[in-house]
Length: 438
Image (cartoon, rainbow, N blue to C red; front, side, top):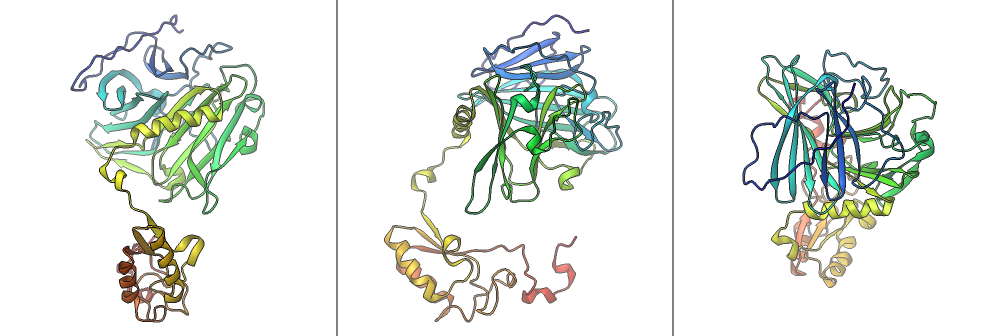
């Protein structure tokens, strides 16, 4: 049984040093508040930390939030190798252990230039893991920056299959009605010359079907590899149109990432946000004794309103985390000849009018992109790898073209991707020890 609800207001005392020891919390329920944002937690059975909601501070849910079930309400989702994923999860990340059995220890508070930092500490005595949920509270936006740290305090290595950066719960459960009726997911397709193509979908349109019970599928967007926005922007929104509330998020990482929206076995809703994991990007982590692993950071917030209000709040957050630098005032203008221009087929004849035009409009740098190394009978991608100037593309050699660029008052640049060898590169005859192979 859960004790009666009451809220602990977190009092922030100015300190030059963070607290080094977690402060126990004896209440069943407590909250974190910041810039009109309120995050409510509960201690299930007085020891298991569960995240109830993230809502505008003065928002009153239409109905009482459900009590967390045996596999729902997780504040952290974590699965270690050899552990039972103890729920009917299908392809989802619900039911992970030791995530479900983490015991809450307490909280730590400290100050940052952009606001406050709160760390919720949990432990698992089976695997001897310490898990720290970090909440960096933004000083101007109803946004928190979330990431998770896990430390192996034991004597044997522990394998980590997945670990969430942030979790959001009960975004549909604040109102009556099904997710299909209430929820709209905003996400953005992304591609060359088609950036930030925002879409709005019902859950069923993204694979999370309205079957009247819990679902073993989810609405996911994700990325594999170092091009983090190759298909989707690493960001999105969940709007409860009936409640008039929108949650927004961005994954702050230049590699693989994963997001998953669905429901637990008790039909309450959740959103998982994280970086690379073993299931989707083969990012298995072998955590040795004494080692700490930290997930990629995620910004997560909530506003009263829709897409525009959420975008405004996220923009405020982004402007505060951008660290000032003297170069911003003297940021150079760079012209690159690839996109919408030469497309990897440079020659002296094609470059000269572009160099003249770039100089006339005041560019500081002129970059010759792909193809400067390929001969005229070669394609720029198949021939990549040797990084020596083409002998057939430039009338008096590449160096003479660089002199012309400098003569126009610009600094010349060349595109390089040194980790790549094309199928027809002269280097393809080298032995295997020259390369990183699968």
